[in-house]
Image (tube, rainbow, N blue to C red):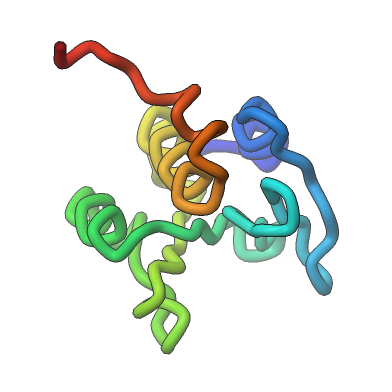
Length: 116
């Protein structure tokens, strides 16, 4: 199980990311754009993915990673159950969410050239 502090550490390790309250929940942002919110009582994080990334991550296990069940889910907002998600999968999901909203100059810092 991944704890809340681990989520914070991963999210805040991304370039220029910061934590700002969003209503009653902590949110992680790049500038003013939210890439993740924490729901501490439910022990889950909600990440902003592209629809393509949402489909990809949801294939892992729909009880662990799944679209928000309303119109927000159709926009890429995706829930991640912290009790069952592997560390690497959470890191990948937070990074993908960050890259979805970050300026190109920042998201490019996270891309590798291993395929060349």
